[in-house]
Length: 68
Image 1 (cartoon, helix red, strand yellow):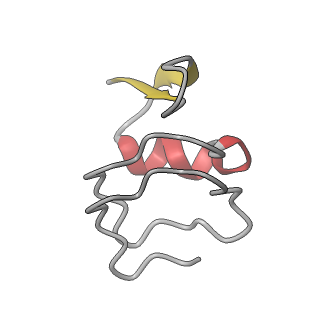
Image 2 (cartoon, rainbow, N blue to C red):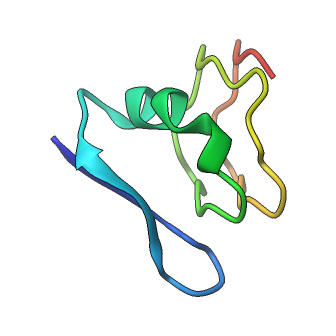
Image 3 (cartoon, rainbow, N blue to C red):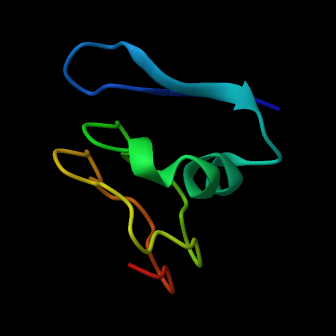
């Protein structure tokens, strides 16, 4: 499935590609999540250890069991 993750301030696409789901896209690109719009994303059980989430929008994101 084609996944796009945009910068929450500029709407610039920071991650784009063919991934199984959003969790896979986030895990494979976790170094580039600064200012990403991840609102309402289901990231349960995602491996986000070491991710740069500075300025990311995680409003109502499901982070249950995520490794932060």
